[in-house]
Image (cartoon, rainbow, N blue to C red):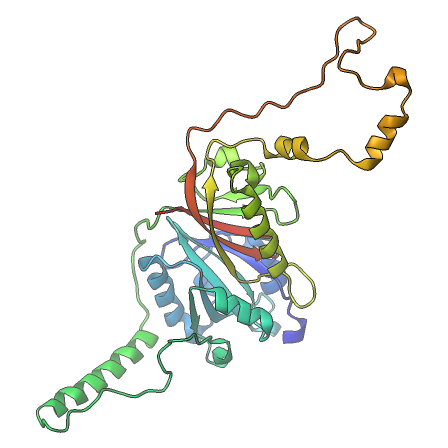
Length: 349
């Protein structure tokens, strides 16, 4: 079954409630889990969690919001619509974005792609026991071997307290794994914004904007993302996005996930017309130059030529837009997925 599971990733948004209601899903959820987005919107995300992992996933959802996490990765099982396919082992990323959790879900398969995802994540958690081989250890991580507290054999009075510590710690750990917590909707967290960009367009058209904290939703939708990047940093941003697009390709050459990229650039809330600017800077092709040189003298362009109506003809000159009121330095998290590029922004400190 694993060989038949599509190596795709979909983007999702859930709310802060304990049920984690689906608010937004991209189309690739149907390829991975069999559900159409319209079938899940408004329903609890916990409905798809494996019963053995329900308590841990609910606790993880609470901790993610309360600790205001970003670029965190978890391995867990999610239910497929087709009962014969059972539960799919998935890799799910998540970032808290003001009043929602934004992330992605992809099929978890061992290999270079899994290593890239885990090595670029800020945190990796493994909930499904069979996925322990996906756990990534970094230099300086504590040893996975249980050593226990050090006993002071010179004092008999310390032994009971140490023994009590061991039993209480293990009991709390087991209770944390089995007890199902309940909580009310949590308050808003960091002032972050999430954008979904068209990864198949050179202009990276904005398809979705989660809030108006940094950019006006009505202003950015349908426009090139580069309209809102300062010309001073747009080259670096384009290069970063090209890298993320290259990372976000699976072993079969299909658009998928590919880890996280981090950067900083200058954001233009007022916007500009980056397409006109790009066209103005683009050099004239040799083919057009040859056609221009072969044109009859009477048809060649001259700044002093006149039309038949007697009106003077002048070339259209591009006038740069007015300087925006201000630029904002932002921190960014980039990630590529099957249906688009996910971009998380926050004002840089």
